[in-house]
Length: 588
Image 1 (spheres, one colour):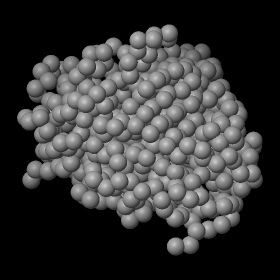
Image 2 (spheres, one colour):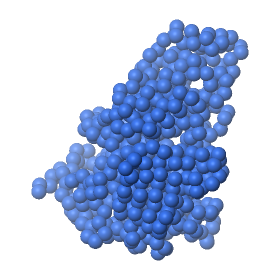
Image 3 (cartoon, rainbow, N blue to C red):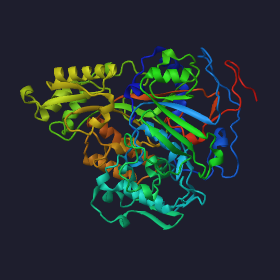
Image 4 (cartoon, rainbow, N blue to C red):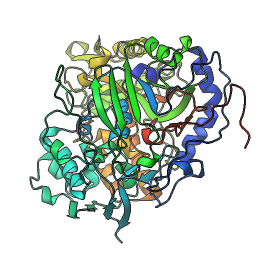
């Protein structure tokens, strides 16, 4: 997932926030080490601290629980919750694409936890896959065929039963070549999916997705993939109601009073959608509706960080996810900071001469003053993938070697400055992007004689501009979509729709293909080799691992937990029955 606001996710200058983050860094680091790379679900695998959130079709949800809450930043109490059946959340303003086949932003992924549900969903504490629309699964002896049974009670919000065919049709439509879905390459582990999405194979029957019965879905993989259930938590693997499959746009046109929300199968349904808000109501036909506490959910989109702060101070919004002015918060007890499985990086586009020569890209990397570039970041990144448990250590980008850089440029035949093509660095309009872009430009001008031009693109256009071809250096913040290194490495595959760098390397492809036939530590070692190649060949320039910032009072809200993907399914959220006073701990 791409983070919508690079500034927030990359560099936060507010001193109090950074001190708070440093104070808690060891706790969050331990969490991510434990988080690891295992994704194989167990039928009833719910951690003890989240037992009350386990899907249950018969037992009503109890929102009361006692929890010790730190409140060391309390300044002034906000107004209390007035309506315990409603929740208002504030997100930063930006376009929201309701058609999940065309979505790629982290903010959209959070919204989709309200309206769409796949075979598995995220456990809000551990991020392990939890059975959702599927009630059970079976794995063949060769570990390549997965058979899922859809819940009998699973329905769309219009009352139509949820069928296996709704999954099959949705996945095949996402794979249609003309759609160019951002996440279509995630499906490449499925037999025949890559050939179908590339247009090499026209027959959808050749793709390993079958619905032999109304409630039975069979998926055949190219090779064993123990992380497949974790991947299935991603919104790209949701079902689609037949009426929505061919609909051109799921979003309302401006001024369209006849718009109808998309038919969906999640715990909530959309009632109205405007530029500044989306209003949801509880889906009373949802199979696990008894465990959904809120009857109404409102997401407000704020223009500025100060707007978000005012919504928090007034008590209207009980969760802020996005830009917020921390200095004007009257109650800072809700500041939540944690490490994410996320990295901010720059990349070099590899599709045009001379940048398609990895010797040139390697030389560009070798003249950068890495310590200066990463200065000021709490979690400077030398590698693309955060060092999570079980993943081998990868030697990152730290070396500055002018002599080797000059040798590589000479070997590539680039010694005459007058014949050098212009190098365009495309930046966001942030202070830190200007700082890093300036350092890079100076290093490349002075040490490699490159002709460098820097251009700034507004935030609202920046991500889309990465699809253009008239620049050479861009930046991104990528949040892992599931708990596995592949979520970062699949971006750089030659036929990935997310490959803005246009990286195309046969050795890299061979390593990724090799990993598809492996399991466990052997597979992780191969993926680490692929990452090392990516770094050594200069396609990616890592800057920092990104923290997540949320404003939410966990003393009053149940079901919200800091996690490495910064995704918090709306289904599990509820107000606690009793909120302790500031500085008062509850004793069981």
